[in-house]
Image 1 (cartoon, rainbow, N blue to C red):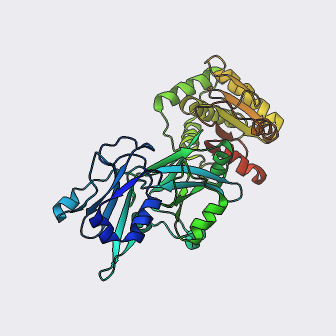
Image 2 (image 1 turned 180 degrees about the vertical axis):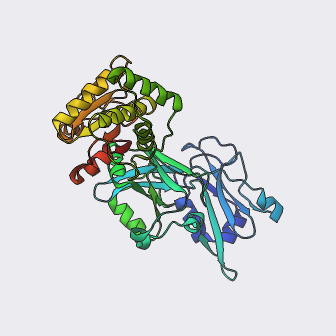
Image 3 (image 1 turned 135 degrees about the vertical axis):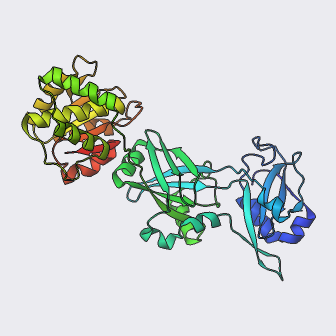
Length: 396
């Protein structure tokens, strides 16, 4: 710890020198847990203890905010005790194993339990809540299926791991993520989360060697978090508007079956075998409707096809439908990866060529990743690339 830490004599006597040293080396001074203000290097800190009978909370405070003292709480007081700690996180981009979000979930506070009534022997149990929720030691990480309710949310420059349900309900951690790590997370469909109190992810170098050391010493717990896939709902007014644009552009009103197929594709990413794949004019109508809904509700859309002839027909149809509606329609290429609402149509070969250009330079700032509408099944050789480059995949 960079700050001078004052520890009351009673606390030293009760905890013992070894436990005090452990706290000094593991607690991270970020904010005072009394006033909430930032702790700077010049601040003198006090170590305070809240004894809640089943365990104790060791916390950091400005010298002038709270004295260093051992405070024993009644069961009622213990139930009302609130400790609003700071968490810190970073993303480690491991090329072979995928991105890892490293989190210290409790910077200025530690939970301790007495391991013996005869000697001053305490164990740090700050991560017990994560362990109880389903995080596992390193040896079990490879076969771990994840914590109930824990999921990952990907944005262009940020990875967020949160739990809206389950034993960690209300938890939310996030950190900046590089474009390469973002692509790998999309492709894998999950991220690994590691919780530890042995370092400060914001300032300490989190190298592969350091991770191996934490794993060897069992100072980190892991869980998989599946990447949250968007599941939009069809807006009826937008659907009616798209149907009218298709009527004007193609001269035909989409049948009820084609509209039902469009809704399944948009909301579920596929028809799940409920309907046969459309062909000919019906295919052009369905793709136009789906692309219009995606573009209107989510942002840029890439329509992918195997061959040039299909791609050209799709582009011409989409131009007839949306060309006068303010939505640009073009073949895949610059500036396809932008935040503009546009429909780009191309073959998988064209997509690969465009991706190669953009993989060698930072992507222009985009509000969202594009949506992929695959007219033909995505080739196995392209599936990881498609998953990594798009927010979601709609596949006929």
